[in-house]
Amino acid sequence: MTTTTQPPTTTLAPSTEYVLLDSSNNILYGPASLPTSWLNSDGTVTDLTMLDSDQLTALGWFYWVSMDSSYNPLGQTLSSPTLSFSSNTVTATYSVVDFDVTTIISNVCNTVNNYRDNILENNGFIWTDGNIYDCGQSARLNMAGAVVGALATNMSFPPGYTWRTMNNINVPFTAQQVVLLGLSVLEYYVQVLNTSWYHKDNLLALTDPSQVLSYDFTAGWPSNNLTPVTTQTPTTPPPTTSG
Image 1 (tube, rainbow, N blue to C red):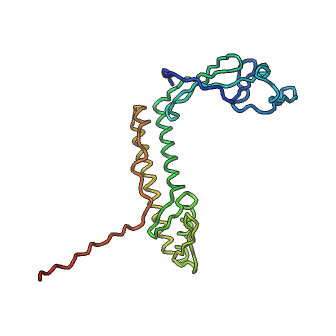
Image 2 (cartoon, helix red, strand yellow):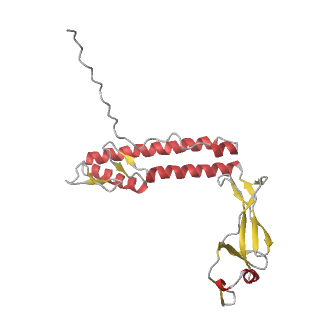
C-alpha cells in the first residue's frame, strides 16, 4: 500500500469527545463522550464531572480533535493518527492510504454480494397472482420443502392450504400452484445470481483502480415482477356512412 498526497484538511472544532492517554500517549479510552466516572487502576473511582479541564488533563484526559480527511472506504483507508498536543487538546492527523487493485476489486465484489443479498432478502417477488412473496434464503428453503411435499402427496394438498405473502396475507394455494411458485422463484434466484456473477467477472477483468471504483454494478438486475402485463385491444370505430 502506498500513501497518497494528502489534500488540504480542515481542523474540526473541539467536540464533547475525549480520549484517555497513558504515559506513552497510547489511547486507553475513546474517542468518545466523557464518562461521568472512571474506575482507576488502584480501584478508586474518580467523579470526572467534578473536575475542570486542567484537572482532567493532569489525569490524562484530553479533548479529541481530528483532521477532516475525505476518502473512499472501498479503495482507501486511514493510517494510524499522528497525535499533537496543545493545552487540553490532542489533535489527530490522518493520512489516506490507497489499497492495491486486488484489494479494491475484492471490496467492490463484496459490495456486489451485499447488493445481491439485499435484492433477494428485502425486495420480495411479485408472482403472477399480483401478490408479493418472500424469496430470501429461509423462504426458498420453505418453498423447496413445500414443493417436495406436493410431489410426495401426488399433488394433493388438504383443503384450506395457504401460502403467506410478504405483507402477511394468507393466500389459498393448490399443490400445483405451490410447485409453479417454487419454480418461478428458483428461476428468479438463478437470474439474480447470474447477474452478480456477470458484474464480478467484469470487475475481475479490470486493472485500473479508478475503473473498479467507478464501475456501475446496479444495472442489469432482473425484474422481480412477474405480474402479467394486460393490454387493451384498440377498438375499431364503425365505418361512417354518408347521408
